[in-house]
Length: 88
Image (cartoon, rainbow, N blue to C red; front, side, top):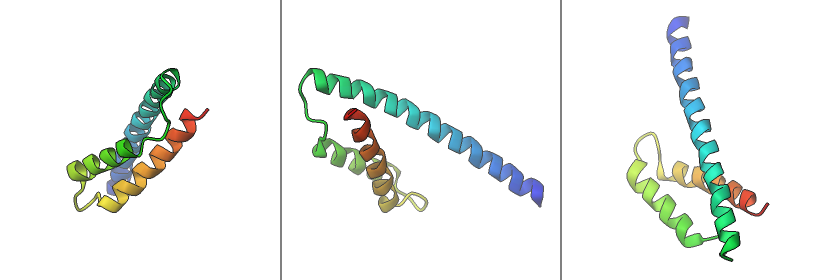
């Protein structure tokens, strides 16, 4: 039984690694967006973009595992952090 749980946990660890790598890449791109916004005097917060993003993700990915509530909360956290980065 331990072999089964160990294998499943290894799979979870691999997923977590992929999530962290993707998030790191996303935040690197956010820094580029921040630079562009600063150079072109654009506002950091763009509520329309945030709504469009979460709506698209919910439409595309919500299922029994990924509820719209989870997607919205997760991306609110990610976007709040991205805004912090943009303000630095």
